[in-house]
Structure formats: C-alpha cells, structure tokens
Amino acid sequence: MARHPKTMRALVVGPEGIGVREDLPRPLAAPGEVRVRVLRAGVCATDLALARGYIGFEGVPGHEFVGVALDGPLQGRRVVGEINAGCGSCSRCASGDARHCEARSVLGILGRGGAFAEELSLPAQNLLPVPDAVDDDAAIFVEPLAAALAVLEAAPWTPGQPALVVGDGRLGLLCAAVLREAGLEVDLLGRHPDRAERVGGGIRHLGRPLDDGPALRRFPLVVEASGRPESLERVLGWVEPRGSLVLKTTTERPVALDPTPIVVDELRVIGSRCGRFAPALEALAAGSIDPRPMIEARFELGQAHRALEWAARGGVLKAVVDITGP
Ligand SMILES: [Zn+2]
Ligand SMILES: [Zn+2]
Image (cartoon, rainbow, N blue to C red):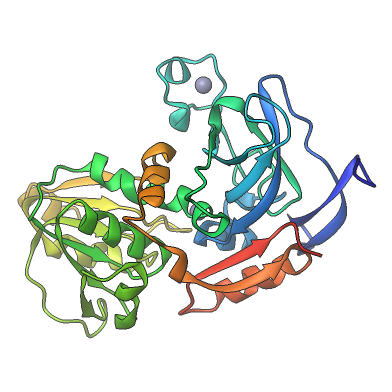
C-alpha cells in the first residue's frame, strides 16, 4: 500500500507557473480505463510549448512514457499507451479513429493528466504490452517513433526514392531514420551535422537549412519537422512538382504562407500528427531503429521542472524523467 494512497507527486503547469507538487490527487480510472504506474517519461517539444502557455494548458504534462499497468487485462506488465482517448460513441470512434474524435482527450495535452506523475490513467484499449527486447529507455520513444512512422502512411513513396527531412531535432531524426529503414535515400537539413549518427547513420546531412543553407535540388518527398515557423514557406521550394510535403511542425502563432507554389507545382501538402504504436514497438524490438543515443540528460521526478528548462535550451536532444527514483 502506498503511504499516501489518495495523493501523488507530479509536475504541474498552472497559473503560477510550473513546479513539482506532492499533493496531487491520484487519477481515478473511469470505467474502461486502467491506472498506470509511470516508470519513465520523455520530454518533447509539445511539453515545452504547453509550459509556455500553448492552448492555455493547465495540469500535468507529459505523454511519452513507459509504466506498469496497475489493473486491467495487462495488470503487472510494462506498457506504453496511445495518447488520444476518444469518446467511444461518435462515428470516428466507431471506425477506430479516436485520434480524430472531436470530444477526445489527449494524455498530458488536452483534458487528461499526463506522464510526469507517479500515476496516469488511460482507456484499456490504448495500452500495449512492451516486449522484453525493448527496455525502458527505448520504450519512451514509442510515441514519437509512431509519429515518425505516420509519415510513411501520409504520403506516397517508393524505395530508392530521394527524400528530404528538414530539421535535425528529436522528431526530425526519427523521421529520417524511418525513411532510411523504408529504403529511401534520405538527406537531412539542420544545424547539427553530427546528429545523423545518433540514429544509426546512413543519412546524408546537408548542413544548415534556413539562413545561409545550400541551394537545394528538389525532392519528391519532403518532411518538415524543424519546429521553426519561418521554415514553412522555404520548404515549398524544395518539393518537386507533383511532390509531397508532410508537415510535422505546429506553430504557436499563425504564420503567413504563399499558396502559389502549392498551386503552380500542384504539390500535395499533408499534415501529420500521431501514429500507430504497434509498428513502432515492432521496429524497436527488431532493433532496426535505436533512438536511445538521443538521450542526453536524466532527471528525477522531483526535478522534472529542470528537465523542461534543460530541454528548452537550444541545441539539445532528449531529456528523460525517471519517475520511480527518489
Ligand atoms: Zn511528444
Ligand atoms: Zn468519439
């Protein structure tokens, strides 16, 4: 039995800022939901935006996690969880697409407490068991890797085709690794030429993209994952006529975009957010993609606010919060 069964420690974003609290109510699992004891959680750009006040967020952030199911059919097993929880009764939910349910909650992002906490709760069907071959550090990458794998479902592609990934941050590197594993010839634009090796190499790094970057040829497939709003307009010029641009970057403010190249070159511009977890778990278990070298810093839950501060500095990769530590 926990000493304080009704409360827990968690990182909280609120009107007074961000900090770790000891007295947060433990999540009550709604019918059909399962409580999860969180082991480890990763910090991502979305968490940093939420901490800055994006979409007026208040509550516990964090959505990249591995934990142990406390009840339900996977009780006692290590699990990861898809982060979108649908209403269960609308037509989108009925067709298995809770990701686009209009009444959805999203773990640590929208209407549902997140993973920088001792416990969280998710619908039972969102949870997947983690194979033994995938350790806790690898498992926290299931959510961003699933988002990267979604690129392959978003746009047409064929093996051997050239592709360009714009941005060599956390998500850009995973997108580049996914395209490489699918057999595409991947060029990567970013500020950190050494980083292609972090996801196993086999990716050509072209250097800086935006200000003084090289004049580029055009590509049939371009993935924009820089997180930089000013990049959006420039990337349109790097897509071949009739080619595809997959957008991964959300901006906290509206940006101006000239639609002319989209119309004249008949580009396909496709938004892409989350992906399915099962293929991501398979890729990690097979070892074809190993994102663990991207981890650069570790923090205990009591220092989780420091993890977000650290991650908000430019030029750093993954920060991990160990929930079970002191
Ligand atoms: Zn994320
Ligand atoms: Zn629904």
